[in-house]
Image (tube, rainbow, N blue to C red; front, side, top):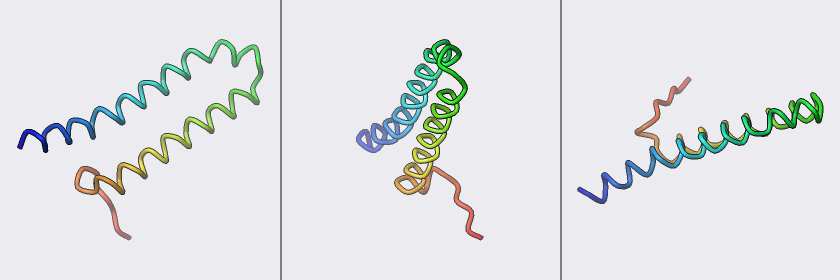
Length: 72
């Protein structure tokens, strides 16, 4: 039972820590993006959004019971 609880905690902590790292990266790079230009800001935003989308897909595939899936 304890092993199952640790696995479920890891499934929660891993995505939250990655999102926290993304937010920190994004917030710390905003000042340099203002200097660098709008194209760099758009590229970083696209990269971050792609990472978040792929993280969501990964979570749905590997933890289908935790995430609601709609079948059309």
